[in-house]
Image (tube, rainbow, N blue to C red; front, side):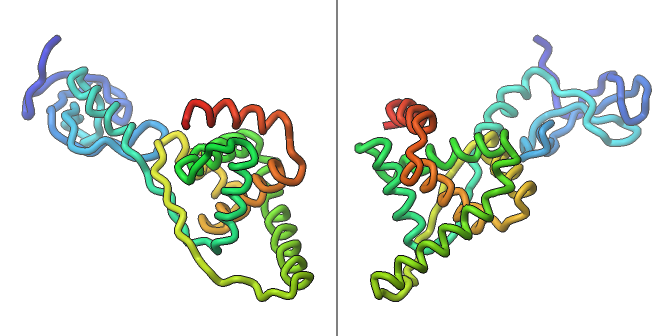
Length: 210
């Protein structure tokens, strides 16, 4: 395998210039092809005419793969009751599940909803139903709505983050409201309807994660 050096020249086809061009190997930040994230400071071949990256040597591939593995943070401050509901739903599926399994359950729903966008559009209605039901329970039990807040923080890979990004675009919800709505969907599926297919799938995943 030929090892390229910074400043070395070569030849490559440039899509932008539509011709064979001279390249100069330099270190650049290169966006991933899916548009989500980038590999930083890697050696690439740059078109000497338009300055576009036109070649990636094999020696840079490991660094790109490692960059793709970098975890992305999804965070929000939520009313504590939402995390209580999420934990209760998790416990109903896997008795041994701790808070570390939250990411597994949420990531599963990110993916399922991203693939079934018609269901994702209904998330706002599911959330509204939960809010109304919670208010009715507070009134019936003669307790004031709690104001306690908790932070939900997850480090996810680029694939999970991409699913979440799809849902943000489809639902047009804020990150916080989207997380609330997904937790409400989890509550509906696992605690109210006891969906057997979803429960079985999450049980299989939880056994691997625990």
